[in-house]
Image (tube, rainbow, N blue to C red; front, side, top):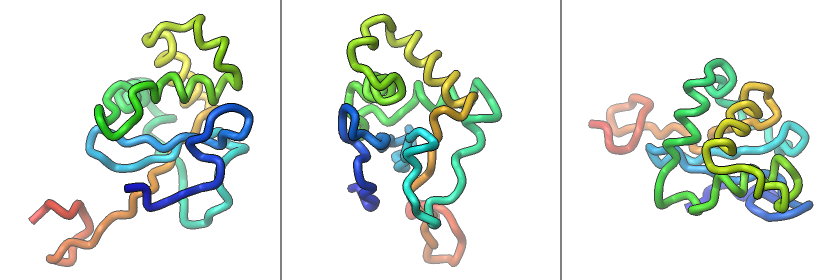
Length: 131
């Protein structure tokens, strides 16, 4: 399913360079720190809605796809941001979401869409299922 494989993404520990996410619509995203952003000119800009609105950022993180993401994706993001899996025990899920939202608003965590828009048979840009 992963069309893009950036080095270090999805790892754990010191060598982690971010994580892949799937939104509730099934589109793939890359979540990473600014210093870990892949040197890929086709990656584009981060999803600006995550930085413009606390509500959008919270909604994005709380409505991730239920079975395309690992069950502990929020924990993985926290460990990646904190750089320490042992400090994660201080947070419950709600506090972890709050921390991640703050990290998005402060641009400590960046979200990039890695799925490309697909041309439909009618010549319009959109999803494959639109008719």
